[in-house]
Amino acid sequence: MEMATEDQKVQQKPELEQRNKQIIGDKIKAARISLGMTQKQLSKKSGISQAAISQYEMGKRMPFLRHYMKLARSLNISSGCEVESPTVQAIVSELKKFPEPLLLSILEHVIELSEEHNDGLD
Image (cartoon, rainbow, N blue to C red; front, side):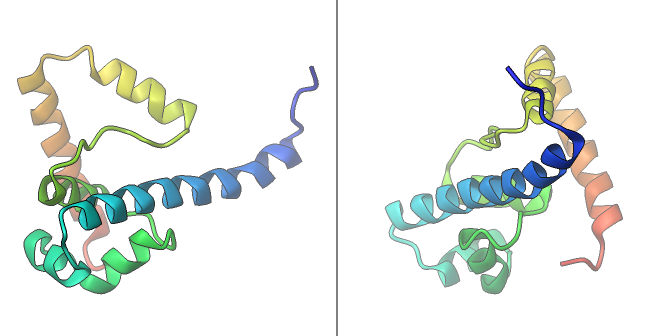
């Protein structure tokens, strides 16, 4: 079995990122439609702009973590990781070892840090 060259790995990264955007976008759209909601209704319920929701559903943008969590809550869907990244899967596997109250505290802190870092980006 051949090992991927560095050039091949670099080429695969954008393809993987695009596939992950589309997987998440498809999940958001399917959940929204199954609830009989329009993008406008989801926007109002989640506090996320309709334009951003549209871009997420089309796989053009990846939701910020805080948006993904808001969408998951608004759509009553799991916020579990559906991406195919081995790194993300390893992180999720390790996080599952924490007691739920501690994990929630960690996630809240990560979201706060993300919001501080991304202020003004969306």
